[in-house]
Image 1 (cartoon, rainbow, N blue to C red):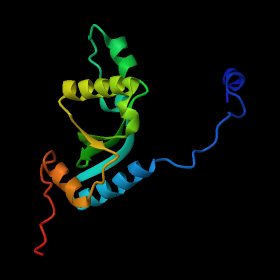
Image 2 (image 1 turned 90 degrees about the horizontal axis):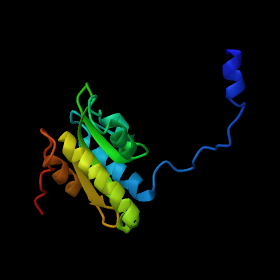
Image 3 (image 1 turned 45 degrees about the vertical axis):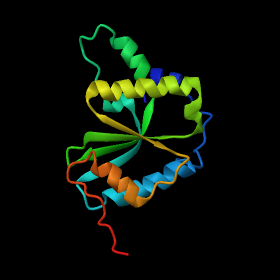
Image 4 (image 1 turned 120 degrees about the horizontal axis):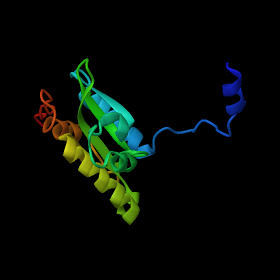
Length: 154
């Protein structure tokens, strides 16, 4: 390693691995989403940064301001299509924290970014139960080729 880099990079950093990657509600929804899209042409990624989803217009008057609004924000789940991994749908799981003013501002920035890019953002309430059937029904409204599970004849 070049000497200048060695001087700037410490031997260690004060970090540890998080024990949990997801909250319980995020984990539960992720597993159901995986099951819901199994066998389709879609894939799902958790915790995707907005700056990885959106390109900011090169000649935008407010390029820096837009970047600052998107920086440090992520979407809970991003569904992509096919082998080219083209984003088609994002899902946010909104819990109690989404009732406070700061989070509502952050949510509105996300809503505006998705609307501006013509990409669908679905918000689900983390305080509600989401069945596999309800998830598939919701996805079928937005994902071409997705069909809800057939209703069982009871």
